[in-house]
Length: 237
Length: 378
Image 1: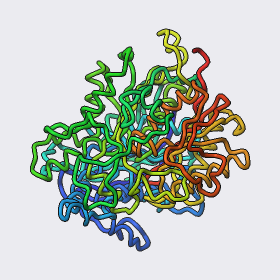
Image 2: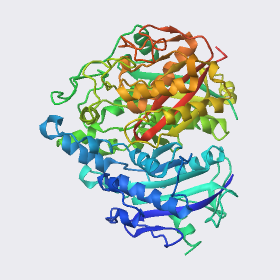
Image 3: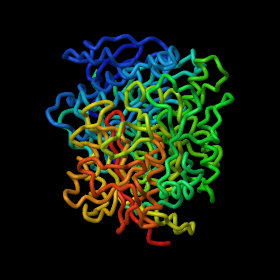
Image 4: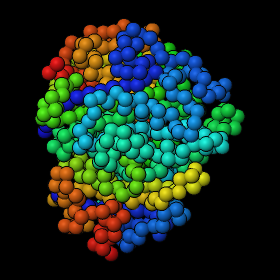
């Protein structure tokens, strides 16, 4: 199968960007990621400030990728799917939420924080914000590469049900306070995939894959999503 | 596209340690929801849940490890070494976060969902890297749909889905804070329903291509005839009251199976017992099936809501429904909600047909529908 990358967006400790405007640089695992909603969304978005950090990172990555692909604006729901990979997911939010449970035997537990204690909640936020009515789910990886998600994204796009699939990764980084110190990406990185020949305008390039074979970008085997982003980034900037 | 068969299935629930005993408890109309003693409940809206007594919260390991061991004991005969393993869970070993926060000894890696796949792969001798899917209460349904799709398209020959979630204070307190815990055992599709009851459990579903199943001489329990997945794109925790997302998922499941809606003989609904979920489902089913809506049931009045495991447990029970040609009672039902009259029953119902629809919906707006077909080789 052959598909094309039509959008790319990210937010990490090295900054945020869209692939057609900025050169992608991988962030440093565990380093702080600072940005405001104004840098991502053209219109005010009050909900953004109420979200947990994991959701803000993921939603920003998805928003930038859709903007880059020219797919951010919508009037009717679009049957676009989203697959995200993560190691820690919303574990940071889980810890914050449980801090509200401990005092008073749970009487003060925060319903707002609890709503974000699922690693796929932010995909619901993205669906709301961008009218994405396709399936959305999270893949938990032992070591973050995003490659399994990319395989699954290409499969479901090839099945012909969806005009586009968003695929990426989102993580809040290590959580030493919980004894979890392994390195992981801090931030989010998303790509928009579409079938070859369908999108108008210039694309980043082609992804190809045979049954049970590796995924290749412009003929070179893809190792993980950050390295794919580095390769794609050379296309326009 | 290739035929996808369910070759084996098993469960561990509060209603029984395996599929047969869980089925019998459900068919008798008993509930496994009872007073909780795993953690203090005085501060919460309810004090009941469907828990598995064999899961002892002591020690540094999460109880989900023990639950996974109990489940994997049932995976006999084993699975081919080339099998793709998919695990599905919403919160994995989140009980260990509770221990860490309370200063108790706990293995932090149990918090990571990927650790479940690693444990299961080691135990079953599967060398390949597992996949771990998280999609709220539809996690296992999405996992079965994706696993079936990989077999249908010829990429995989054998996929094992293991789904599980445990009853913890973390989850219990959250649903109490959201004001959706029922103070009495939940009563799905009942006019007096007052919310959900939390449960815990696990299921495995072994899928194979028809060719692989025949090659190994494995009989089939059922066929995964079709599936559909969607997102409501309406709210992060509440369902779309018009049932738009579920309608799309069900229609896609029927379309992918190439089956007319009239062929569906029964529905295994999500049926959580919350006011809005049950109404949304009735709206969606009436919209898809019209006046000839097939009978439906919810197992959650017996088993509680097992979250990421719910879909897998319901699919495993679905193989029994198809084999026995009988739809279980909706435990807890006394007076059906308006629009559910004649569809749900507190007694078991006849199931006359080849196709069972099973659906789940969850936070984040996710909906998943699987269409099961009765196995031919018995």
